[in-house]
Amino acid sequence: MQSQARESQRKGLEELIKGVARRIKQIEESAGPTVVSADKLLLELTKERLEAQLDAWQRGRPSVDGNGALGRFFRSMGFTPTIYSKTYEYCAPSFGEQKAICERMGFPADKVCEKIVAQLAIRESDTLPKPDVVFVDSHGCDNDHKYYARSYSDLFNIPAFFVDIPLYEDDNPTLASLNYIADQFGEFIDWAESKFPGVKYNEGRHREMLEIDAIGLKYNRELYQLAKRIPCPFSPRDILTRLYTGALPSLYPNMEKAVEYLRVFRDTVGERVASGTGPYPEERLRLLWSGTSHGFQRGDGQTIDPCKLLLERKVALPLALVGHTSLYIGLVGAPIGDVAEYGVKLSPLQEEAKQMATSCWGGPGKRWVNTSLKGARDTGAHGIIHYQLIGCTPMRGMGSVLAERAEKELGIPTLNIEGQYLDRVYMSQEQFEETLAPFIDKCFDWAGKPRQ
Image (cartoon, rainbow, N blue to C red; front, side, top):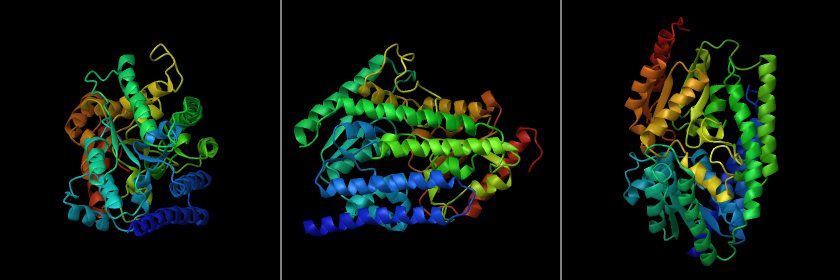
């Protein structure tokens, strides 16, 4: 029985690798207006990461399921971060099958984040290898980061370790706050080293990865500055699918190649700006996307997609905000290694603590609103699309507050629209555009511009 499960897990991981390989082939055969060389590099990095996970699992090396942004921390300990679900979402043939599995388990699959549905389906069906430990924290989503992860470890008999991230009601994490979190990271190191053979924290390796991530984030901030140019040199799909999300080279085994991906991306976009060959010969309006966006990465016409309508109406989308985006692009916080913010150079564990303490999906509700407004102001947005993902507790309840403050402080409207990003039957493209098109008209009107 165990050998059958192991064979199923091996095949599942190999299918993910094949799924990414198919997408690489599609990029190679495409003559579309995307940044082809950078697209291909990013997919190659994803494929190499999955291949490394398969190799580590077959060799019996310890693995951890935890926040993807903590990959360098986990790797500095000798863990292999899994991050299976993110790729599984895009390669799985049927989200309906995943929902059915969760409903058989007794979970209300239509009321929780689809990411959780995908993760539970992976484990219940033994589709992918089981991690050796679940790292649980309270930095963001209640369902995913806190309650789901803890329940997941109980359901499938996986050891778990919980790290408490304070709420910070004044939304001002102090050095003492970072130390509180960093001390818990230290406790996790001691616990894991005593429990899992082969796990040993290497601070020097951790510092190396932080240094290379600092280079990646520098390129990322430069990409953001390019995105603010008028006309915007990025298509909406660039923004919704990958810009700002692949910013940490430490996510990938080949970190130098990840830095090269970001450099190629930046240089190619810079050439667009210089030559005026971007997707918008004329930009009439710009909007901010606030909320989950990565589900649109499919680009297969089977999930809702705002890109075609935005391009037709000459409406740019220079920024999509999700969990750590604000830190990665410099809207909040200081760069890695900077001493100005706290008066000292942060240790590696303090740097990880800062990342967890500033996620716009964590902290008090006003952090989400403040970050969205700051992004809208910084990009000159004429309106905000607030995509309220079903089951996303950090931002769903803030829609009315965001709309009220955006109108009062920025004089722009907000579209609060509820949706999903994997369920292909929840909302049709026609229904989505019937909601989005009048909002675009409203933004033109409020901006005093003729409708396009």
